[in-house]
Image (cartoon, rainbow, N blue to C red; front, side, top):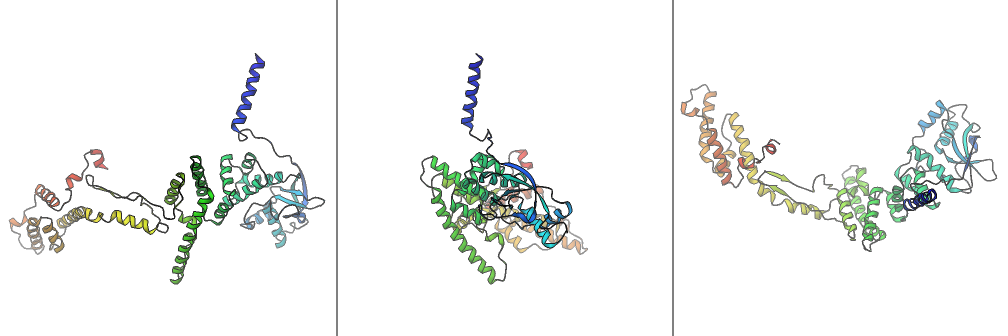
Length: 441
């Protein structure tokens, strides 16, 4: 019975291993050995006959912000060992990890900032003993990945090196410190030379590129024939059109003696979130992307609650939206002003009523005209009498009792609502929501 249960347990473990793949069960693939040595600074190189110059350096700019590191090495000394590989049949070593430290020490030696830092000074090193390029590449990347030192573009370049070196997905992902699924997203970008170049040029961001790939894969899973290359051809056309627009805009800025904004020179900034959503929807349906995506703009006027909603236009990027889309917006709102006239009249009337209560003097002719148009001319005589009474009071004269009569609040409300109905507006009392809690909002 024991052996039967043991056999079943082994079978289950093997089955799970097959199902889960190599992501959950790490396998040691490195065969390199290491030894510590102190090596003269002058014998550390960035190139060799076996590997291209700076092949194991994964930073796009080795000189960036180097001075703080120079100062730190002068004040505190070397805190981390440089990892190197001994060149065949030579007493010289190729730097595998720690290029910036070596570069900083060389700068300090050139500047003679510290008499102890020279080409003959001994540098703490870890020598990687192996003839396996994959072990050297993994070592060079792991050091940077652990500190999260690499930018996204530098990570993509590293993924390309890992792919070219024949790394398994699991080992490559562990090397750069990402999950296997995320590594595979990076890999899908570098596997297509055209897309990889577009990302490197800044024409499209990594996340947007990944979403486009996923949308195409989803469509192909449903039987659609469109390929990534097909979509990239359409995207190249879109980029060409945007470049022409950017060039024309630059010329206008230069003609006006102004500097063209840097953020408007980046093609990726024109691929807005709204536009990307439109493209993803098209791609998932097996359709090609369109240079001028369609937008569903609309106007919702809730006359009962007196609320206006304009969906789809919030934070609209006018630099990238097409003329046809702007025309659709205009078409959607072109009839809106006439529908808003009663609300404009209502607001104007209420504001003028409040102003008349607090300000003495002649009645505004525009207000008089408004009262007559809205059927409230009967109230004009009252306002005129009140204005005359206030002017007389300010002059110190006695005001006849008949001219001191206050306007009955109830009659005034009824008059307002009657006038608004005649003008085609919804009376204020009907604009209040039925729900008391909603009314408080």
